[in-house]
Length: 87
Image 1 (cartoon, rainbow, N blue to C red):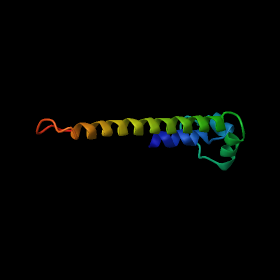
Image 2: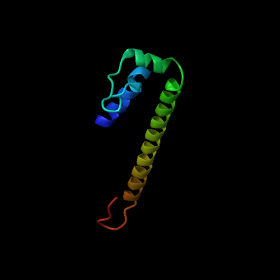
Image 3: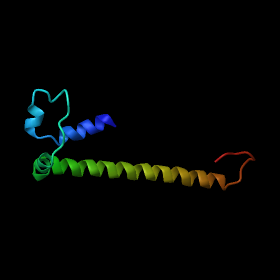
């Protein structure tokens, strides 16, 4: 969890905080000003949309795969077959 919090803190840092000499040693605390700068333009909003789209598509594909495997297992279990046959 710590690496993710550092990534988020660095993403929310202003240019001055990132350019500071000790920027690599400790992540700057996020501020509303740095978040506002990210969302007002540039790649910030586009990055959020792309990241959200990839997350949603990946989740949908994972659920589709799970449902297909479950349907297959239920169909095979309903065929009868040999005693002791596992689904």
